[in-house]
Picture 1: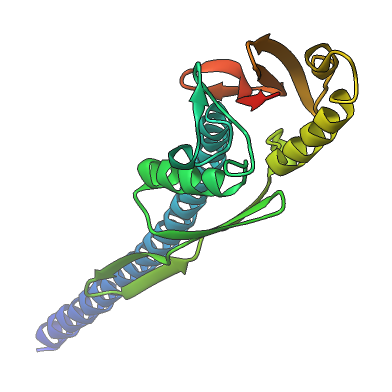
Picture 2 (picture 1 turned 180 degrees about the horizontal axis):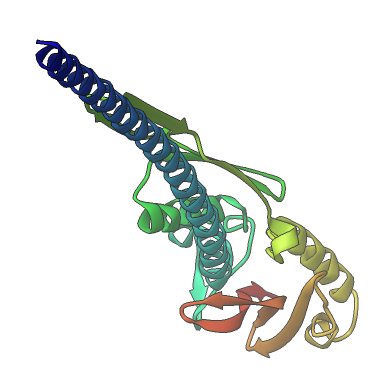
Length: 243
């Protein structure tokens, strides 16, 4: 009888030990899964942050590329609205009804940036500072299981300011126009207006002047080279002036 009671006791003890070990093992697995879920959530958050950083880097570079392209295209047409201007041998003629301005740059910039990003944005050009504000973008990730649920939402409004002169982009087209008119007034008092005008030098531009009949042809090259149209080149501001 004593042996039977001992066997029952031992069996009961083993049963409880198995229950305790099983519970401990289940608790350990649950804890491990919760820790794993927490790590995964943290990793996802870091991935989203890194993805956002990469997106902002791309958008800022797209702004710079679009600004260079706009500078190139604007200078090539003499920074004027071609519909309002007369043309001579591929040069638009600067005159009172066809004056250079920064509006052409702003228009070309918007088109270029839209092609690069496909995103909606607002841009503002003030003096030599270009400000670009993109629409709000959102990134989110979620997970739900028996151990943990999480939802991560990240929104950002990419906004950039580019100092164009620091990029070598000089939009002082109106200043060039004013200085060239001053030079023309001075040269018309000389015996040979054309020879006098050939001495004209525009600030911040490498200036080349030639004459063709009654027109002076100006090719102003930027001091800095830009990577445009898959090659490194200087920007050329072309225009003609009737003398």
